Image (cartoon, rainbow, N blue to C red; front, side):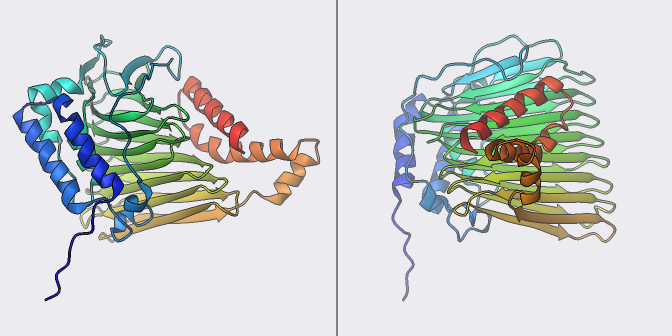
Amino acid sequence: MNLQTKPPRTAAEQAIMDSFNEMMGNLPGDAPVTLARDKLLHGISQAGLPTRRVESWHYTDLRNLLRGAADPESGAAKRVGPLVRGSLVLPVVQGRSAELDAPEGLSLEPFMDLLVSGEAAKMLAERGADDLIGRYNGAFVGDGYRLSVAADTELEELVELQSVQSGGQVHNRFVANFESKSKATIIERHLGDAGQTGLSTSISTLDVADGAEATWIILQGRGDQDQHLAQLNARLGTDALLKVYIVNIGGKLVRQELHIDVAGEGAHFDLRCVNLLAGDTHTDVTLTLGHDVPNTTSSEIVRNVVLDRASGVFQGQIRVASVAQKTDAQMACNTLLLSEDGEFAAKPELEIFADDVICAHGATVIDLDSNHLFYLMARGITEKSARTLLVNGFVDELIDELENEELVEALETLIEQWLAEHA
């Protein structure tokens, strides 16, 4: 008889188990929360880290890429100024939130309170058999925030969820409810220190109610040795609008998942993503988008710049249910591959079960146009400056779609600084 044996644990898998044993005494939660944590950790122990054999992780072989887990001991992170002056900053410094007063129209509470009360127990669940991030974060999550924008309220103030880390491990969770006909812009900002080795997981869960308009910006700027595993889950109600902007400019190993459920008629979802990759980093953006009802629309544009020996991947799956007639869904992934040693994989997918739809996807991989370079250099611009100008134009086009001019300027400045350092 041929018996299959489970492969021995990798160093990273063993480090995860050891970290839990070391941290469990400090993880908040009542009995149901502790039971949920144990169940999720058992799932990691049984399944191990995903490999290329797991379809959704095919391009990010975590069993091979995740060499270990950072020491659970906290570093000495410090809160920084807001991305946009005047924003309301909700800090999570080295994994711990702060007690803050919220402006009118916004309710706010630390996620730790939900863990202590046991209310969070029902939130600590995996999406499916391949949900390593859900398991990992659910087992270890220590803090974060839950916020709610009141119905018929337009928040004029930008809100910045600021997760700052200096080595060690950080496991955050953000829950945001945008009530009926509300409108707000939230910045989810992740920061780390160069030279420090840190590991972070983060899950954001958004409920965009009927007629609400939400703009959610993920700015990932972890340190050059950090490992960052993140997930965003969102549900859109009738006539809801959700715009998600992602800018990846840091991290050694990054996986950003998005799972979007367009559940109400007349709803629209936008994704604009910029991945700036250099050194020997690896960044993975994976999207699943479900159009579940008639008369919904979506648009996804991903722009990637790849330098040195960096690698990246975009996996985008759009599923259109049989009842979701009149769906209009468009997806594009465009990559500037500026190094012979770099690589980027694009895997757009459509699963369409309705017959009256407009759906399309496409992907391109190119270098800078030599004619455009020549045109600029012929006018006295150096080759480096010319290349930077062209790359800026390639990615800034997406950022310019934001309504807030100060936010556009802040993001474009960060992109320019990254290009000046790496390009």
